[in-house]
Image (spheres, rainbow, N blue to C red):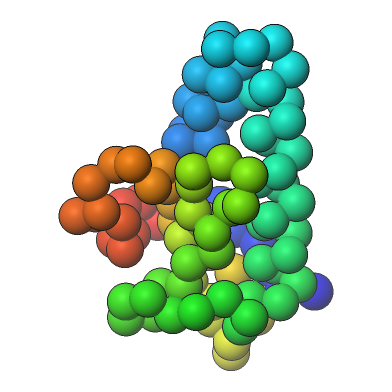
Length: 101
């Protein structure tokens, strides 16, 4: 199994989205969190199955919600770094940038 690192910005995006969905409909935030967690586990197990989009960034599209998980994979260290839980309706300008270490 690869080492998994979630950057602080990704965790904040994830939590804010969970809170927003939960406010829309009780239980929907929990469902969102579960879908994201499942996709992150798949990324950790098989990161190379997701396409490179820009530089070393890869993108895993979440099918149930309008989000993508942006990450980098360091094959030498076998490390997956989740950089963003990205809402696909946002401007893609900063989609493939690492914000914080």
